[in-house]
Amino acid sequence: MAGRIDRGEALRLLRGEEFLALGRHADAVRIGKHPDNVVTFVVDRNINYSNICTCQCRFCAFYRAPGDPEGYVLKFEEMFAKIRELEEHGGTQVLMQGGLHPELDIEWFEDLFTQIRSRFPRIRLHSLSPAEVDQIAKVSGLTMEETLGRLKAAGLGSIPGGGAEVLVDRVREEISPNKIGWRKWAEVMECAQKLGMGTTATMMFGAGESDEEIVEHLFRVRELQDRTGGFTAFIPWTFQPTHTELGKQLGSRGTGAVSYLRVLALSRIVLDNIDNVQASWVTQGDKVAQVALRFGANDMGSTMLEENVVAAAGVSFRIDKERVVSLIKDAGFNPAQRATDYAIIKSFD
Image (tube, rainbow, N blue to C red; front, side, top):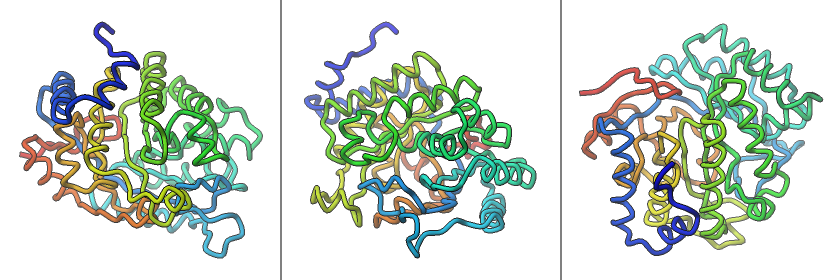
């Protein structure tokens, strides 16, 4: 694309651009992509089908090791009850994630997804993560294409970008040494996209990475999107240090609003080939999320009827659909409820 910034310019913007000037730049990019002044959101629920995980990431307060008495795997009926409640709230999407379980194979997920699709045909399964898909393939002795093809046939609609953290292996080896490397993350996403599945990309920052590594993450996402065009949205969010091993090591209180907004704005500027950028009220709170709408974000993410992973790190912001609509209006935008693929379901006057 003509006029694209390179890594050097991106690093200069992140480090040296005046704060409000950076925000105005990102806002202009947003307006160019979304001149209708609409800010969207989705009504969904996060269901953590299990907290048993062999990965044991140092930034995670949610997981339990295999054999831990606090470990669990939800029964199907428990998950069905959660989805039924979501439908009663007008929800359309389930984000289902549960770590790297050493025993749950492809048949378990096929059975679950097939039953969900049969019982709740209007619900979109936007679920798992590249690391989970890779784990399912290994447990089941399947190739990546076989695994994703069977999951799609069973009802998996799209894959969120969880587990991206920072797509630089130096960082990954420090904070999540047992998780897949960045190339495998990209391989899973590219395979899913070739099968016609939607995907999103994320970045968790504030966990000891450098500015250069933040920039590298953004360009690796941009380069993958140039090849495939399969990412519908990008979601940057901040490491929550409370109750985590990594937080104790870093002595971190978490990433502040200014740093978050700088990275968000840079994301909007660099990722010129991804239409949507989400604000993270889950980690930053609703007021900062409002400001984010003037720093490049055009989407407020989801209402999250349930969220457990970030909550395990001591962060428990909660907002319902009415609050999201109010926040968007008060920030000067036109709110609209969307589907997973960003099709508009309902606009609010």
